[in-house]
Length: 509
Image (tube, rainbow, N blue to C red; front, side):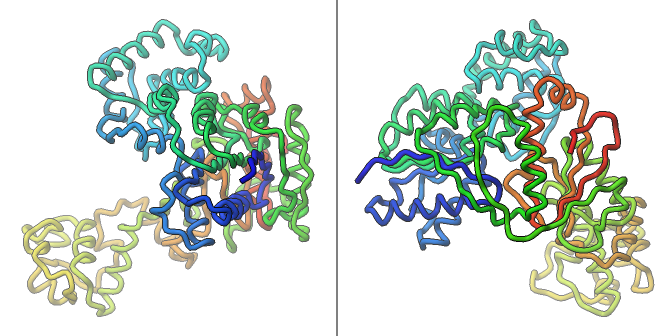
């Protein structure tokens, strides 16, 4: 089998994942067993997509693809670690309490050390430490380069010393340790083909892990797009991606972008000075671009939408505005009306119409009722009376009044019966129901630009306003924001909508 090393540059919507899937199939046809193929990625989402795509396209069972995972997952499995050994938010809080530097309480499905960090002082300081390790730089050098005078270096050193001491005493590791230990072990798995997805987002440290993985496979394919390299705050090494191989192939046809959005994307990306040139084409459809003075000018009443802002704070401002008008949306995968709340409302309305409900729905209804007002004492959602019900039973409202403590009847509407739902939520739900939109699966998604990376929507609304920190970075290093907003506009499948700046700190679109 001949040796093949290739870098695939994939502009937005050009089918990078499908191209990888096809190449993996070629490897299998050449006699390479699936369990000798590694496909690693920067994010769990991308790793899962690659795994599912190959299984669906070529009829391969997931258990036969042990090396289709993120680099952190591979290092975790290779090291034989347990989840109890990994530093989490509770450990960070204990470290912070010991040195008097507070950490936040961010909930995260942890995959990297950056995922454990919130917005408190300790989180902010620790991000500088993790960035230094990701870039393989001494802490002092990283601090000097960032030139962030809000970070006191003596405090930073004290926090780092306490953090490392805590890990030693408690026999704990973090995700960066896993990667570093994998590199030190220098024991690559016996793979014959290596595929690296989203390679433009890998840090200098992760590229060192890739160097270990590259020792054995004859087939090596690196897929990504330097123009979409927006993870610099986590140490992404774009140049390492561009230098990975001599052979470079550009995917030339976008299956996502219409012509108008493609032109806007070209206007943005051409502002980046140091990039790999690419010639690619949009779909044969003009599409539309519209500018709006305020959110109420945006035609949100139909179609699929994604509203993208630079930061969570700015996204929250727009979420509040939509909520005030009764628009239902999702954020971070969760609908703006909590599913349990809506289920209780729906169940009550059905109940009032004479439809019998299950014990689960009854218990959910009672969680939104006050004891002594909605139901009698001793009949709460966790009471033996309700927990002892047959899961397959169907309960009428009259039966609940006779035997299960219900104190109100069907003459009472949900917003009075479910009296533990706060007034703001009640008003929001009433306004939302008037719109007759899909509450369970909202058409509107609100996201930061970074969180939307890899996604797409028919209609995209981009907010150009920047935070103080992002605007400061924009003035000194504009390439970062060029890439961020290039990613933002290129999520568009049909119509691109752009908000006019609402502040004096904004990106120029």
